[in-house]
Amino acid sequence: MKRARKKFYALLLGSGVALLVAYHLSFAKGMTQVSEFQRLSRMEEETWQVEKDLAHWQARNAQLNEVLGNSNKAGFEENLLNMVGLFCEAQRMDVEQFSEPEIGYQNGYRIETISVRVRGSFHQLLSLLHHMEEDFRSGRIVSLDFEKELDYKRRKEELYLKLYVQNIKPVEDEA
Image (cartoon, rainbow, N blue to C red):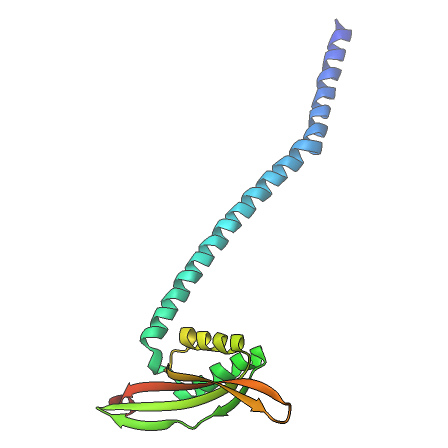
């Protein structure tokens, strides 16, 4: 009987050691992976919420920019030059002409008109038009003209886009 007890305790001890080794080899890794999965799932939810909040605030900002479009600290001419210049530089287009603003007054409003002439391919010029119509809030395009001219030095036809952009604001805003 004593010998049977010793075998029983040895078997019990061996089973305990085997369980600890099995836990260490398989269960611990699985449990670590489950906790890592849960942590990453929480981070994904938080990221999704941040992206949702960011989209909401960007939309709100766009609405406010639309409403307050004429109250930019920089002037109409500077905003137009920045937008056209940066776009043309990125698209490798040339700004051929950027006129001084023509200022007129009518019925209590100040009307500033600037003409811009840009050289590029048809696709590039259409991209510029789209960019101006969608993103330029300080004024609006009132007229445009595509012109094709022969460059005598290079003996090549070039395409130009001439834009007339206006900013209209009440005279009281200037005070």
